[in-house]
Amino acid sequence: MASLADTIFELDSRYHAGVYTRLKICLVRGKGATVWDSEGRRYLDCVAGIAVNNVGHCHPKVVRALRRQAGRLMHCSNLYYNEPQARLAEKLVGMLPAGLDKVFFCNSGTEAVEAALKLIRRASGRPGILAAKGSFHGRTMGSLSVTGQSKYREPFEPLLPGVRFVDYGDQDQIASAIDDSVGGVILEPVQGEGGIILPNPGYLSAVRRLCTEAGIILAFDEVQTGMGRTGGFLACQTMGITPDIVAMAKGLGGGVPIGAVAARSDVMDKLRPGDHASTFGGNPLACAAAMAALEVLEQENLPQRATELGRWAIEKMRMLRSRHPDSVRDVRGIGLMLALEMASEDVAKKVLEHCLQEGVIVNRTAGQVIRLVPPLCITKRQLSHAFSAIDRSLTAQGRA
Image (cartoon, rainbow, N blue to C red; front, side):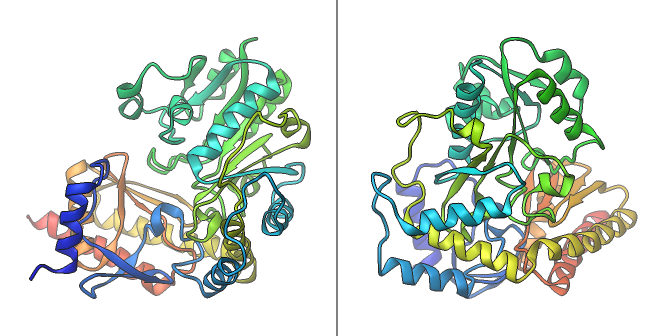
């Protein structure tokens, strides 16, 4: 008789679009930083649904909020008001940098970026947008248009016109590229899919100054860097810079799909009724989950925890690099957004496979980068176990 996992693999192969490269495990349950598969095997999750489960899997407070709201009202559309949406808007604005005082709710990160792009055009009255090489902003057509990786863009070109790419970290290129056609700049404070690439010191503040002087919009994509992951609620707060627009999603809903765009009132108020909308955006169920997740972030002091544990993790990764100088090329990170750049894709693939065999889930991005974006509730002992698994994989490869 086929196992549940084999049945799921077969059904997925037969009926689901083949757009994902999946690990051969079928997950059925999660708690904190741990998940279990259909065979009962336990894994330490250092990916967190790609930086989604920031408060941990199935946090009791989020689960209670969902159950309570599901018994009252799950959806009513934005033709009407609903209390969870209004309460969440107030709560979110209170956690954002001063001046970002209006929000729009949607369902995902790519939708949040789409809204931000439309808002740049509406608020500036100009069609041009500057984006960074190596960036990743989503897979819908507008978000893809500002994603600076040809492997994602080329199969679907031509894309949105008016987009130009500059090197990430080079403010002089932005200064040279700004002209009368440019309405805004969109950047990730830290490039996530690009391999956890941190900005050069002073880069983001220089871009902020350039945008202010030129009278154009600065938008930050904090879909992956936000919700406590990098040490502040948003990375821009950690770095002391306030954009005009910020896109959020992933960890915002505690595991439930929700996205948001925040902006200054004078920018957001450029939108008129009908300019943008979302049927499911800000629905009561998602907003109730997000409210609970934000409360958990505050009550459990998870952003500060990410800062402290992240510093410790960077030191552990540097030790790994010193132990395996031929395998580990670089170590990068901020908060619990961590990267080990390996010497090759082959080394990275073997690390991922070995860790999975040891019950540790890590992620490979940008070819040869092992990315760790675990739940912010992960313990030092658990994270140490993950590093030990990586260490054993590199040791075994060195002997081969």
